Amino acid sequence: MQLIFDIGNTRMKVCLAENNAIRPIECWQQYLHEAEEVLISNVAGKDALPVEVAGHPKCRVLTWQSPEAALCLKGIPAGLGSDRVAADMGARSLCPDRTLLIIDAGTCLTFDVIASDGTILGGAISPGVSLRLKAMHEHTAALPLLDIQGEHPVLGFDTPSAMRSGAINGMRWEIEGYIRHILAEHPDLHVFFTGGDCTEFPADLQSIITCDPFLVQKGLLAMTDLGL
Image 1 (cartoon, rainbow, N blue to C red):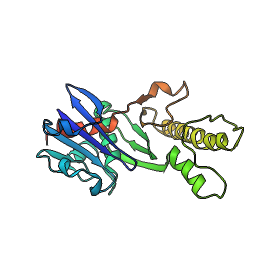
Image 2: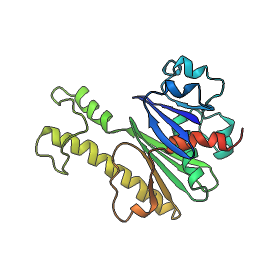
Image 3: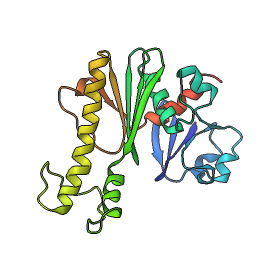
């Protein structure tokens, strides 16, 4: 049994992995002493990691410099966030022989492209939906602070619906544009999508897209599978 911590900029997500199944949990404290390993991705700084978790005798923290990452990926950019490293490792563990595009829609929207031999070709980062809405509010005098819930037609009928349209539909078409551009250059492309936002895709792209909410967790579990 493994406890898996994905500590992001907005929240900490904890999962339990047991018998080839991954499930989210809330009260992780009751499992801590029973866990054979504690696997961690942390992009929020060392103070975000609970002290008792860091003190577990088999605590493994993934970074871009981890030897497990180097066994799975080539050309990891210095300082690449551990969540992106984990998602990339998770994608390669599931689909090791194709060009991959890994899209994570969380606080930020991130794109990583990996060649079939595991070389990271590059990536991109832009604001996620909530950040887009927050930025519009904070950098204007009159636009309200909105959450993501609400109508977002292509053409908004009032200020909130227009803001949500720009944030949500704009992000969806940004994702679609990246997929189509990279697919044109790499016909063997397979796309992995993780994170909570914008999971609607055109019918002609659906066959090359795998939506997996546990991609980061599967990448962290790959550290154990690599046997280091």
